[in-house]
Image: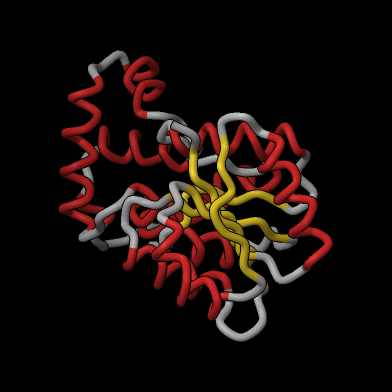
Length: 210
């Protein structure tokens, strides 16, 4: 079955470009396109998208708050931010809200389509410039991390969470650490419980933000 896609973008020319890319892709089905968060929040439940592409700088309700509300309505949907911003705080806010991917608007058609495939396979696609900022911020913040929920994590759990923040898939983590995928899943369940979160993106955002 094709991957169902909805897009929230207030820049009409840019939205047309993205929708044309999506319509050309044989394994994707564009099920909704919206110019603002308010329209998306009112109508997207009927779309039942697998992946939502959302701009951050929307008029009215911003994209981060929009994703937060939509994620509550549809926990299984994956959200990917499309933005001109490379600001670390916006990245973490988007991840905490429930976004799984974060791409700059200058991304190319092949990059966008590949990112959609990646996010459906459990990845967290990010433009390389943003991924570097995430890793740099992680390294900076981890050096000064004090007594917090994240400090309760075991060395192995922190190692896995570091790899999650870098965009590794569960299978890739298992191969890199030479452990089984069920073991990776068990560590991740423990991390969720310790960090009081319910998703990969929330765990990464909370760990990086401590």
